[in-house]
Length: 361
Image 1 (tube, rainbow, N blue to C red):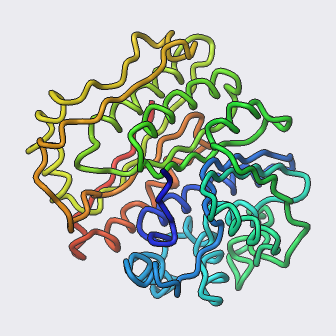
Image 2 (image 1 turned 90 degrees about the vertical axis):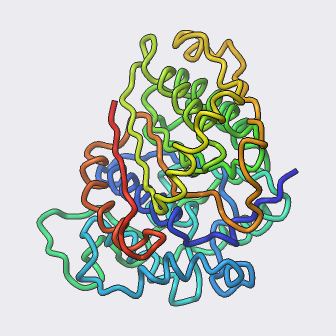
């Protein structure tokens, strides 16, 4: 049932986008001397060995985080410095920090970190990794301090780290059951593998229900850009937007896309979009009220796979995206300074032909 293992993909371009945004969000929550909660619904192993045979097999870290860390620090956008400093600390040991480890770098014992993982093997690795203290603890930035030496991004000696609560269960189930959290200030990171068709509808339904209960919470959803899942992804986001902007819980949304391979994007959106529309039942959402009330079970039917030629050796992923409800203040502006750099360095053809979009509603 669950075959996805993130060790094959740790430190790729999608992780870079996701974890930069996560770092920016954590910086914003850390900037106030108030405790906060973080849910991580698909925690994975937490920390990844970049020398693992799975990482070596795909080579995705080589063209991702290893490439980024090889670039001169002075050439990086300043908004990326904290993320890069964290990654450098782990890379010295041949490791890459997953989202739970990045979260721990920012959180103290006054905060609440709730990690869920359903995979039977990953959960054991996660528990072992979370027994160790994080290599860095990030303190709030002092805007009056200059960016000097190792403290320039807020990296400093270790403080008392958060002790995460780890659950071997469905992340959707846990997020529903534990929302709203005791410490209401905070956010949820939702990062499914999308390896099963129901991930699209389960994600949409879960976010709609959680937002109704915890309307002040920030939701951060990662999603892949796939040539054969265009309609499912579009419908999932449409459903979530309806839930965010309905009733008394109207909230701002932010949709960020980083397209690394525009040739695959054109294939997916132009050559096959019409066929996909005809062969997808789509997301059944009668109205925004239904989304907000979570009365209608969301379903997304699988497309007719005959609409696509066989692609057994070529990836159909052409980038990735992030969708937020209640995004942290100025997140869109900060990402606007970073994404042109990511396009230049991580476009698939090496010539900076990728693109990005930022849509705020």
